[in-house]
Length: 455
Image (tube, rainbow, N blue to C red):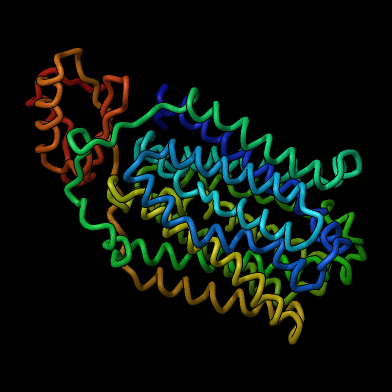
């Protein structure tokens, strides 16, 4: 298996730290926010729910604008702006003395919608065949941040209070900024140095059937996740007799077991031509888990076993789906495509919590699991009936030192090679990524371009 090159290692490491710091700040308040907000002026069940969920709503609203603007003005500028908004929202929440004040702060946190832009920058700086590995490493950092925050939030709240947790979240966002500017390489995206034969208008992102299937899928995936967390906490109390402070005793082993079970499937997905197969396997696991939970969640072993199956499929999809989106989308529209993708993701979070709550109130946990199963079955049918997209590969080309005029001539020559779709030049590097068709491009064609080599 080909390793990451030095640019990819640097980019993945730094972006994983940035994502991890931001996710740590976000998850830190989740175990304690509902109880804290319930004791403030203006607290009602609806207002407390909004304090928790409004973040997902504003994330969904601003993912596409951030992704689109990053295609035009650069990834790093938009990520910096998003981190500043997140830090500002955290400080507003820390100073809020009422539930509406917390809602305003949480909405500002969500308005810093950088997820799509970070994933687009990761895609800019990694080759197509290394994309799954890169997103898996970033996803692993998010998992570590989630577990650390889940267990640490309750402990730290006793020392610094919920306002202190919000200030800690703001600090994490501010620390991420120098990591971004000093640790992450900068890809060039000027018209003279980036070329795409599939450039098209940005609205084409909404008509690409492969992207639309992936967007629908991530909506169902995260709707299922939020619906699951509506039904599972009461089930842990009723079936296992665990009070809410002890629920981590189930969640942490389940997440660890699911990661261990996922690793062989992830390795399969890294092999040439196997990523779409692994995607279908992961979706099938989520569908099986919903059916299993609907049947056996009344038993302790059934509840825990169903959760392990669910998170095995879910975590694998978390690594695969962003990679598939970035490999299908044109490079010039990558930020826009990932913006649409992340909008659907956070819309699923918001709808899953709301609809899951209504279904749970009328039909209990079994109704929620049947809802999940129905939607996952619909997604499975859509994937089964659809054609398999052509997933691009990347070739890394090194250019000799040469005057700027000759450099641009070499880039123009690379653009014209058969099977080349996109050319991305890294700022300050003599390195070029070619996005190529696996069936239409041959390395031998590079022999016709002087001053370039493949290592």
